[in-house]
Length: 223
Image (cartoon, rainbow, N blue to C red; front, side, top):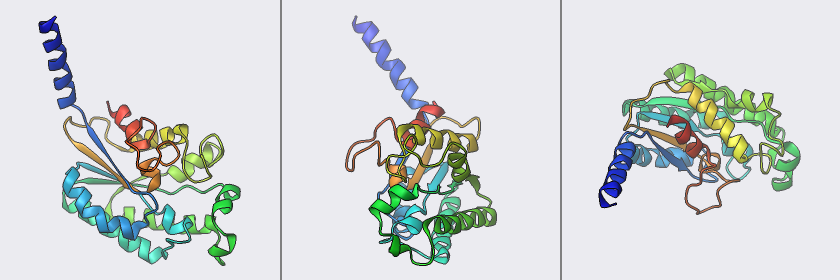
């Protein structure tokens, strides 16, 4: 029995050694300016071969964290340049439209002024596309993917913005499709973003990682 136990332990160690390590660097409520401030630290810690940057939702929809498109551009550009300078390939994810009915139960309609939420999302996505073109980064068109699946409805979104396990699974699959088919073992993928990366909706604030977040589901796909 002792020999069998040792063999199983050895096999598990070998399997772990060959895994791709997906890092969930999601921070709830942060806009791109706040994420950029901590990006260098996350980059140094993870030493990733790939960086998946899903940011901008708070810039567009959180009235306490609004940023102008030019500010969003500056912050995204800084993070992309830092990642590429560190030797990482960058994947940018577009922001999805909210379910307005549920969004406006949590945020005051007048807070958006003359620029409604969907227009603000479109401005952020235009910036994401521009930054990707300028810096030769890959884009995951999650905005269009979620729209084609019915949008941020009750099946795919818990509150009109954050996603259900099924919604996060769609996001993970979309990201996986934009990564190389063959990724060498023992590399890291840094998933940097806000609460949508953290996993709010399927992961309580302050809780350990769960299997339903998009980085966890991405990790399963990469295995």
